Length: 168
Image (cartoon, rainbow, N blue to C red; front, top):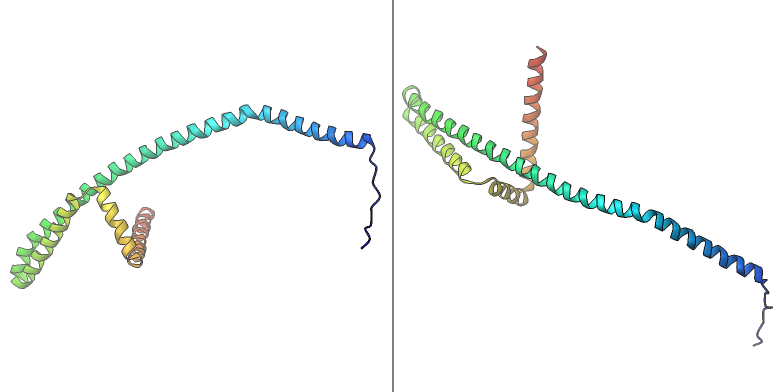
């Protein structure tokens, strides 16, 4: 096969020099921009680091406050459940007299169940309760979603009834 040779293209020396000079100019411009941006970049890095540390500090404070509020709420709830248990136990005597001893025993059984729940609640730490809730949600997510929907509905009804009372 015959080889086809292409004629050599001659470039003038001026064109090559211009291309080299253009490359030099852009690299010099980039270097100058980088030098001007270096303090800004360092400042941004320092600000990001301080923001991350302050965010961590705020997060720790928020977690501490949330945990103390949850502990206080748990104590109040435990006490309220204990009081409910006492009320049920006291009403069992009245139920015995008015309805019958069989129904009074049901009330006593309910009071015992409520009281044991209050003891379990008071005996656990908040972290243990959170872990138990996570385990429950993992085991049965459908029930957890249903419970969340019911609680949300009840809260919305309470808020709505509170707003209706203000309007009256």
